[in-house]
Amino acid sequence: MKLPSVIAIDGPAAAGKTTLAMRLADHLDYLYFDTGVMYRAATLAALRRDLDIDDETTIVDLVFTLDIDVRSPDSDSDGPMVVLLDGEDVSAELRSREVDQNVSKTAAYQQVRAQMVDRQRIIGLRSPVVMVGRDIGTVVLPDADLKLYVVASVEERARRRHTELLRKGRSDSYESVLEAMIRRDKIDAEREHGPMRAAENARVVDTTGLSADQVFEIAVQHVMDASQPEVENGS
Ligand code: DC
Image 1 (spheres, rainbow, N blue to C red):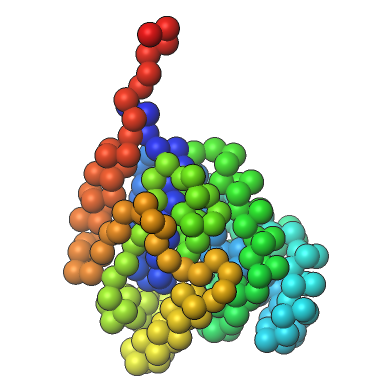
Image 2: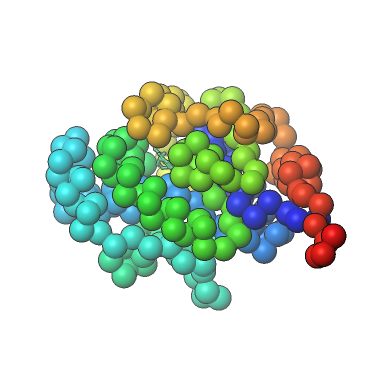
């Protein structure tokens, strides 16, 4: 069997993409690449410089100057990926409230997206990969061998994100998390460039009410369905 070597996983925040992608990448021994971290790193760079995120020209100019790179973690890294911003490991700072609140704006600018998409393609085509985002199956790698579009109800996604934040010691209310999620979904889905949507040939996986194990089983089945029989040499 020839397994799909480029797997695109798109869908809204907290639908279960990351958990699934990490498990699949681990299972298949592929690179795990969450593209959202690139938009987060650009947003962090802007916040550190006290720039106005609403000022598109300023943010685009900044992004042109940034060196954002991702690496597989080594044995003493914490997370599933190491994100380097101008050579500095910023992985631990990408999920702050400030970055959460501003990243959708950065990600909506066309020239920011164009730069990120180019860099993501280069990384994505280097080796077998499970690549996660909003526009991977539609824009970044439209020829991906397998496209999964992972969804869940907005209430369940807000519940999951809320639990995750409480675990990290934050005290946001469920209502505020739900409201922020609805706002971010809207910006991501309605933006003009690379909006979040399922590719026509994507397989939709609804994770509402399912455990991580159940979602993984469904995805593995899709991987098997998308696999091709090996062509024998000389026949
Ligand atoms: O998946 P995430 O929450 O880390 O994504 C952060 C933001 O970046 C979110 O607003 C969606 C956006 N994003 C995007 O527009 N395209 C991608 N390929 C990945 C993320």
